[in-house]
Length: 195
Length: 161
Image (cartoon, rainbow over all chains, first blue to last red; front, side, top):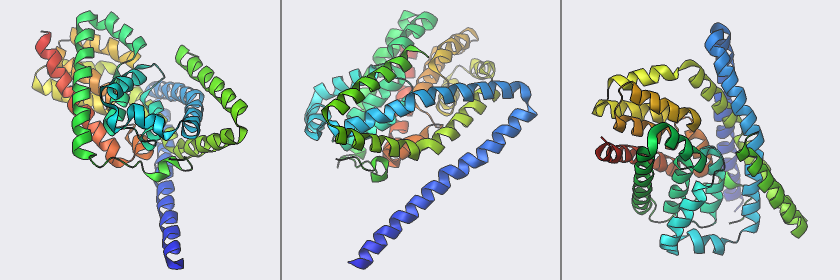
């Protein structure tokens, strides 16, 4: 019993150490590379610095809020509720709902990952979450207006419909082929969240 | 501050307030989940910010338009989807860029493939997605999005000529 607990504790510690090493290593390699490039090529570096700063501002504003929403969903929304509307038996209703949820303009794709994780954890169907993320990524009302303006109504309409059909079909296939047994979100991704 | 940000912040504020009124302890638990998730992702997010800055700074949009503009056949579609998958460009820049690609002689199909992979597949964001949703899901979704992009491009190319 003790041995088992020890092994579990060790395993957890080791995986945590690996995790920390991995992302911090990349970050600490990137910082000098970034600085060097910006110093050596001041012209292009200015753009890089500007873009990085704009992204930083955007992330600093949006991400804490998104994680708070994720935390609130994980605490307040009942599992039964998600299962009923987005789960295995939700059918066409689940597909439509995922599409609508994904089309609400709420910011860039990375914002959707924590929300997708909590929905999966609460029993949403994999195919529906893929639809949700795809809609989030490439169908946004403000963006569609841009597309309309630059590429014309025909292009916009055809791309919209093609996206709808292809995404729904392929997500269903992926759900059936790769996630027949359902899918467990890796536990570390949602530490502390109740199932 | 743009409208999206304001909407998100307002929504979060309202939800948080409702949660506090209803149950303070549950709200604290929610904030703990939020804090843990945020801190866990912070280094990856900072790294991604630097990478995105470097890509946009050092790979000029004009160059992309030229490369795809020259190859508008099947090769163009392949190059366009690959470029779109690696790069991450905000949609606001993507549509004007697509327009200039068309003007430079890129095919409709290649342009459509570029836009779709550009928005749906993010190799730059893959580490973040793997962390949040697990490797299996992230890889499957990105693979799907890549296939979807090519399929959508073909549909558009066949319908619009």
